[in-house]
Amino acid sequence: MFALSSADSARITQAVTAAEAATDGEIVPIVAARSDSYGDVVLHWALLGALVAMAVAAARPALLDAIDALFRGGWSIEAAPRLTILLFLVVALFLVLRFVIGLPALRYALTPGATKARRVRRRAVDLFRVGVQTHTANRNGVLLYLSLAERRAEIVADAAVHAVVPNERWGDILSALLEQVRAGRAADGMIAAIEAVGETLATHFPHSARDAPELPDRLIQL
Figure (tube, rainbow, N blue to C red):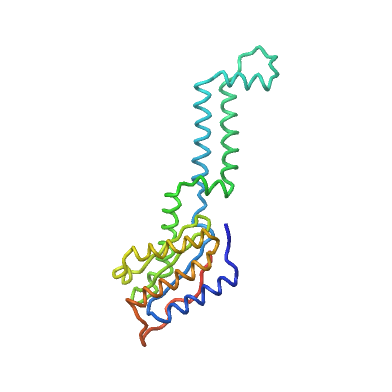
């Protein structure tokens, strides 16, 4: 995962100011380190590993006897306490898996793409409702959201914008942005996306004399 530098942040802020000069619309760019911790995904994988261990032990109980013999050195003639061994094994495996899968690289790799997409979208919509939706008199705001850990982006448009701009247009902008992100040029991708959003807004909401800034022209980093 990478972060934007202060110079990148300044460039993106300048791009917002330039894009809004041609439109009455408002553009709010947000770059987040991540959209979710995915702690539940870690727990699900750890639990699955523990259940698999239980299933293997049920199918091959002799493995528990072998584990008991390994720790006793093979000298005991007592019956192996299989339930105790199984409980210890399951708990230990669960804790180990929870730690290992909790490492960022594995956590994001093992999180299903659909789960990441849903949570990035949910986070973008939540931020839009708080910071954009109720702050533009003409309902012409657009939130451009990039989540670095998931390498996913979303555009959430206000009611007036959504009514005149097809979703395909936003899809094209996001595809170009993510291509730059995958190449390690997140700042360049954000700038190009802001310019594209500005051009789109200028087509439908051109700059007028009555326009007054309603939202700050700056990049928000979370």
